[in-house]
Image 1: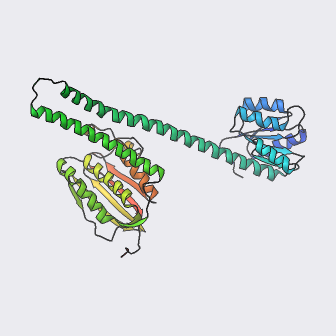
Image 2: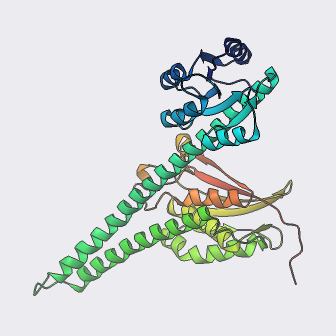
Image 3: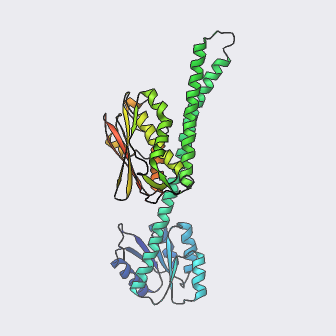
Length: 374
């Protein structure tokens, strides 16, 4: 029997003194706090005051019946688990009590082991229900936070675009140089790119959460995939003076996964390595096969990440705050998306970093040793 980490409270309601005493001794010996009551009225008062984890209640009692205790307990706190005990056990009675909201039904007489077992099961159900509620609350909080964040992030560039366009519309006969006009148009395009990046990350995260991103499990050679990502990012790297390098032989780093999700994964990692690098820095992609896993490492010579930031690096919306990257745009979703993808593909992602030296992100995925289809 599992002992509770934190002492849990059980209320026993029965008009039979011997039964109350017996249940109290059995459950107290198991490590629970036990309060007993001789009728339904006192029991309901105790439930309202104590808010117990579980209630053991006799079905047949003078005054307020066990069935009424069940319904009124649900009004006090629907999370309280109720176990019915009775000496008048029938199938119809058991069905009726379960329909009324009781968790389980235990006919008298019963052994100490039977009582402990049914109480253990009831408390485990309560734990699972509470965990489910906690997760639902966290998800709801995350949804609200997500909507608030995205709304703010979309609003900021949209307001800027509106201001530039409105200024150009109201220029009237005022002469503005072509250079000035081109500068304003360029700023509008930059802001539009910011909004597109936010929407792209939003849609990608939604697909990951709904299970619609990693839809396939095919043999993927990571070498040509990563080379395609590097080609797509070559212009961005050149604009910042960052050198990209990768020595990855083909048919060596093969995994089972989805090409689209893997492209998103390495695009995010290499983009970050460029974005947070220093001028004339390097981004190096290396690979290794060991103990049945393929490890791809993305190493940069950038600003690095402080230890306190590394702990939250893969949290949604979290962005490293550093003076050298204060002007770097981003949604704070890229690495969270990477972690979701890697996890869904059965792998893991880790980071090693040193401030002002650089960072290495290691992606470990199960290797695929099947031969490629002809």
